[in-house]
Amino acid sequence: MENGSQRKWQFGGNEELNTAAISVRGALAMLMNNVNNPDDGDHHPQRPTIMLGRGDPTEFRSFWTTQSAVDAVTDALQSFKFNSYCPTGGVLEARRAIAEYLSRDLSHKLLAEDVYLTGGCTQAIEIMVSVLARPGSNILLPRPGYPQYEARASFDHLEVRHFDLLPENGWEVDLDAVEALADHNTAAIVIINPSNPCGNVFTYQHLEKIAETAKKLGIFVISDEVYGHLTFGSNPFVPMGKFSSTVPVITLGSISKTWIVPGWKLGWIVKNDPKGIFDKTGIVDSIKNYLDITTDPATYFQGAIPQIFERTKETFFSNIIGIMREAADIVYEMIKEIPCLTCPHKPQGSMVVLVKLNLSTLEGIDDDIQFCLKLAKEESVIVLPGVTVGLKNWLRITFAVELPVLEDGLQRIKAFYQRHSKKQ
Image (cartoon, rainbow, N blue to C red):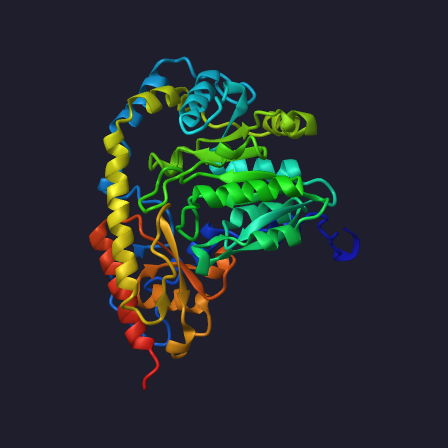
């Protein structure tokens, strides 16, 4: 450039992506950076970090996936049958196996063409939100909820309208609020069952009311069932697809949680639509078109699905659920001994529970983020601030860890409370 001047660069980052970056992963990274990092001379003993902020128990031997699943992946890889590009929607044998697997709990039979394979449930969320992101449209999301929905909707310029889950009613949907929120531009309502972040499991009767409300409003239901069958309370898991004769349902799921393999990233979008309503609205075409321009889950994982479903013994699931039931009891009872925390309901499903932070009992802590940062620094315990999942001054605690580790983590939280409690 003449006279030493320099041309201004014309490129930059995507501001829409930057403003949409609400994530559990980002919050956990911030907290991990605070572990064992005392400032102002506050030196606390360095201890192993206890992660109670993320639903990934794979580091613990008792949560390892079944050997038959590992063997299925090995067999698929060594067969040389699954090295090609993936057809739109996924490998046919895998789609058929998932259809049969999910049909066990339904009154109608799913077909392979009802199933679309994705790179985990996260990609399934991205696809469905993008499919619905027409100009002027909106989607109804639960509060509290899973932040991936909100982040993706923000990125795709899809308006979000929140309905509350009611802790005093076992975290049921506020259906009156749903009716007030919806209008002619509302496309769908999202439910997460079993719930992340609340840990509740909806009853058959409540799911039926959700279906009837959606039908009345002329919207369909997106049911996130990634924790399906991970239940250990009085409410059994009931898939939303049971009510697809009332309202069309898109089911999202994966093998990540049920088989304890979150890194395998194999999920699905399934249409429960015996009346063929989706085919008339263009939803299915949009899903297929999205799949044509995005990446696919690894084909050898897809190829392993039939064998994984066929050979996994029921004892694997019952063992995991037994551990989770005991862990739920421990977390519920030990939280009673920590005055700054209140647990509205014992968790009945998933791997997490939401507890209320009682700031009035604490000195020098103003909100949930500050609580979590100080807890990480002083006790090397990571829990997720509730603001990440839509409820300020709540905490999401993951209890999918070995029981002695869980007890240690909760004891550290209790010690943290005692150190910061308001003195009488």
